[in-house]
Image (cartoon, rainbow, N blue to C red; front, side):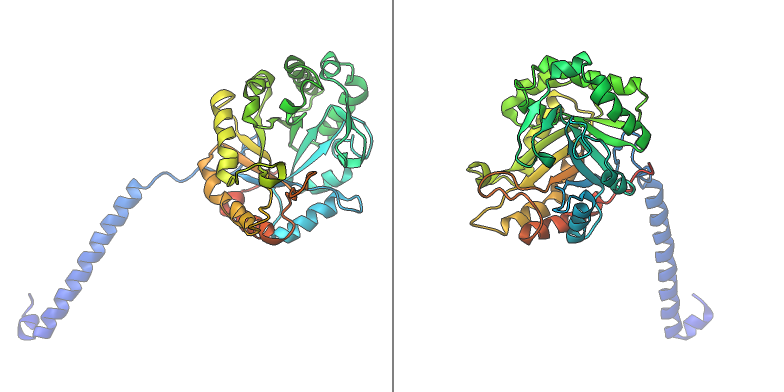
Length: 357
């Protein structure tokens, strides 16, 4: 204690206060240094992998039907305006007609949308009766013909070359929900052969910008069938599944929240097909509850809380089209569904850096 402090009690108090403050600063500095030394390592880059897997979250995408004027671009822009954000991924479907309407992979609209979004292309071994599969009728070409190479020269090779010329990486699914295409399209063995043939044919033609997605319904009543339909790890980059909360749409007695609609199939695929491949919810949505319209809002708002607990789900692609039947408006174009979906899409988990190409 200084002489001045001894003479002036106020000085002693001030000195004590100063010493206490210095001690606190030193202690705080020590704690800060300790925290820094024991802090977890900085997170690795969130840039996606070469197979378009985002390490820090998941892609937010949608299938959007064509606008009435025939434009896919206008339809996507319209939905994006409603939901208040740009989609990471646009999902579109094609047949094998070879027509400009539906049978050409990478239409002008797709190329335009792909400039600042990713594309997911589903290619069906069918020829649709109506434009854009409007009434769901089609002619199946047959997996045996695909596997034998009968369609190479006229159908497969020209579209493969178009994909190669595009250059940018795209997600690609051959005959999605394949477990519901047999026996009409062929046997499981014929599907595997057809899938592998297209994969190998693309490789022979130098198409190296395709990320291969094997897509099944995820319906567990088809569990053994899905096992038989898997082409093998060497032929698959992502696993896709299409699960919904149909509720009154398909006379389902139970309302399944987002978790209950997705987790059982996710767990089964991880346990029985692959526990390392990233998973895409290639189609998902909820039907409305006619008695409780606000229920849709909560279904979507729960997605950001549930998705991180399904850690291999790296892309969520909303099916934004009604399906035939009563209470089957699966869209998020208005009302509580739009409000919930818009809120979910704001979450940082679904806002990841897009690949440069």
